[in-house]
Image (cartoon, rainbow, N blue to C red; front, side):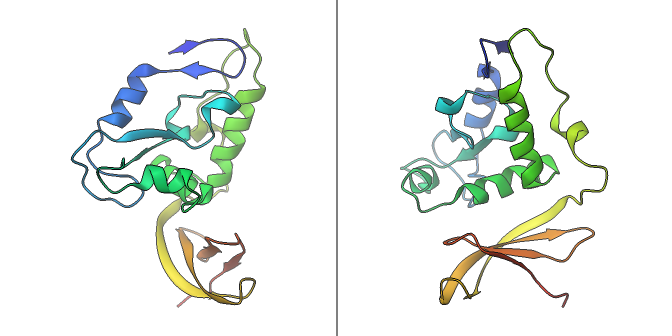
Amino acid sequence: MVRDGDMKIIDKELLREFAGKTRCELCKKALRHAAHPHHIYSRGAGRLDIAENLVALGGPWDCGCHGLFHGGRIMLDDLLAVAAVREGCLQTEITAYVHLLRRTAKGQPMPPRLKTVGSICSSPVLKTVLRVFWCSTCKRRRFHTVSFFEWYSPIARCRKCGESWTMEEE
């Protein structure tokens, strides 16, 4: 891994690893072509080739999830949820780690990996699913990303407006 200037981590080997995945990490469909390694937080805002900031998405000849994200049909929170489940942490911990890396100046030691940055009390996301619920903000039925945690009640977030609420235990 080469650190090139402020807020840049370039890791071509990791990008090749993500391109070699055989399933889209978002929709889980099998890919016939190379996956597209997508940066959750854009390369233009400071390139960070780290596993916590990457997801493998299907290109236009497969499921098209990469194009759907850039077209605004898939939200950033959905990609964060995929990475959080894969890395065994919370979405907010990924965001905090990326922002910490961006603030690290050239020549300073790298902050510790994400799993050592997270709070001892944080509950890892066990799984994330997509469900349709009534959204009180949008005033209609909408897709919600539902995150299930080990120690807390599930949290549903509207994919259109971003409103979130805690679900009751069933």
